[in-house]
Length: 335
Image (cartoon, rainbow, N blue to C red; front, side, top):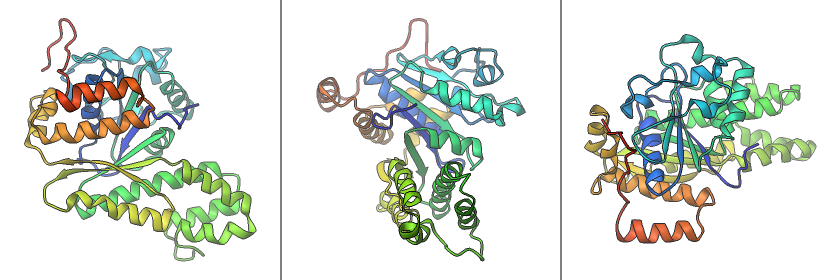
């Protein structure tokens, strides 16, 4: 079982497509590996993988599909090296329909194996939407990042994703509590006949007559470690847009998400994608590099890698000299 006190497994979701989940996953992985950590990226977009393309890997020898189909005994065997030292990749499958719908037993095995991967950090890039597979991967990760842009539709989509993930978790936890399960389903569907319109209202009502259930739900909410990131910030004030999600989450879901960081709009990101040259993301003067570095430092702290080793490395290499250079593996060249 994963230890939420030391967050090393992170999922990046957000509901809406095209907001930069893969870029954020890749960028954080690159920065963490440059800071001396062993990082494994997992393309969790089952049926629509693209992380390998961003890394310049055209034809991966093995993919997540090989593990799901039992061709590989361990998930670790699906890790392929990249051109960057300390950064491994588990490719998704983008051409096999069945990979988008793993069986229950396949999903359980996958979740169990993620915790055993030999890395300081495991970053899961999730697909768009709110399918149960995506929500279960998101919920299983102790560290949960919900990405959005400052656009109203993206903020709505991100909140909808968070709500769907939380209700999925509660529904599984209380599946045998028929009445509570029914009430949760009504709230989730925004049923006009529902007695309550939000989880916050439901909690207030059951606090007195069902204290055991109340405290079980409260514990789940307290353990739901959620972090917000806003991407493609263009105008002054847009960096504060996640505050809207924080307010709504607090009022209706009783969640208290933290803001992990922001990424300003940077033309370098488009260049990195078009040229399949992710090293461009960490160009010393790019706005993307600055935002990624700040978030990676937060992840190191949250991963309890914030002792003397991290403090010295950060102080010496980052504050005084900037990020250390990317180290290419022998015989490897970035695309």
